[in-house]
Length: 421
Length: 164
Ligand code: SF4
Image 1 (cartoon, each protein chain N blue to C red):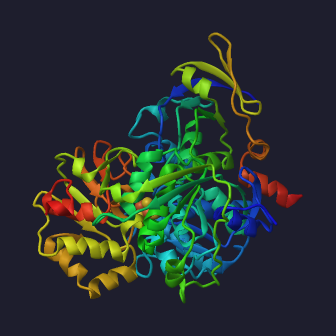
Image 2: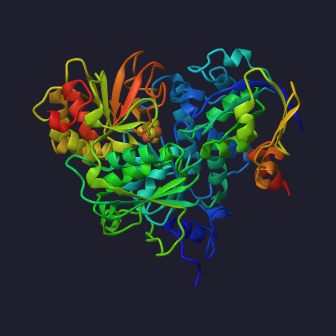
């Protein structure tokens, strides 16, 4: 009998063709899916050509998404997207997406079934760790690594030790995955899971819908983690059934498997959270935010741009107008979500309230396009990073929160909770 | 191979948005990126840094996005080695992949000041401050990473292996 292993170790072992792997070991692994976007793909394509590889390892397993500076914001961005589009055509890569048929990469890959449980996914984007919510191993890499993976279909990885967070108890009203992960980051810090796996378990996680699990795994990298992972269960099966292109493989952690550190969170004590500038671990309960006026609210991104997030925001915005001093930008995470939001009447609620509803893309999340902040301005954002200058001017400020706080803040023009409405 | 240069000092948790802000990510040419390296933090950096200089930082250097534009901009600006208390994971991998060595050296990261002249041997990890010949150790670079640096990065490394 092999040693008891955690789910991440099992997925790595399966892709290394090994019985068992050990934390700290370097292993050569097979990659199921390689992903890049309009910013990282051009560099990766350059590397791919420099290596002298003629064809990608498997055109069905390379996914290219134009989501950062699209619809093209300037000539330079247009040239970059063109490089990616042309490469997809040249290599016969079917899975090339832009806002017309795709959306934000980490929203669309799971929704389209391009990634699934048991997969090993590498993406030239740090939030590739999102797919851990499906019980997959997925991690961000740089463009050179990705260029080499596109050529070979394999790479080396170091087996990470595991930090397990066990969540128990009932969630308070409006509190969701975003609050849990922000709270956790507040406890462990931005380096707390450095080079490690963040494994999310416990009764609360078992009752958590997929959308919240994606939000949590998405921000594992904000704790420095290599990957975040949720052991798959009935919720995962229900979500992936009939969706994934490949047969999913459901791994779980063995009882008695070694973890480096285990933390316990009683979620009944967790309030709505806000991360203050300029670090995702600088968190406070929204109730203790004080009077912080808000110039802009952004609802969207790979963290909270899913249909469930939009429904929650619409429920709070319905019948309200956004504050006269506050601009509100809502970007659905994908074209499919945008369409469903339209059918369900959410878009109408947003427009009635005075919000702008834009194309499914990253938009203001990274301060390059569609809603950039001026000096001295403050934003509440449902995205994942609030570093200096992340959404625009180096003297602007970003406050991270979930959709409930974002919607309440949009109405009141200051950081607020639904109970303040 | 020894690196001799002047120290440029940075603090803790310097993220990749600070190294190269997103508004410049519509560029992918190293030289063009270098012109905007640390644009918001130290706008004079690209014009004053010399080829062979050494960047010294605190904890968690290079955290945040996976953009390889960050180590690329640092390298193309002239920096030949980065010394820090610790590095973020993706930045660590990216830097070695493009042939920019990193040294984890908490003592050096604490002691070295802006303007210090240092000699660094990335293979052995030895860091010498010229002023008083003080020697600081660094965590040894894993063997595979050393091979990458010797080859000049992952691309030349893979090309060599394709040939043999
Ligand atoms: S939404 Fe933001 S964090 Fe997510 S992929 Fe886009 S830029 Fe990155």
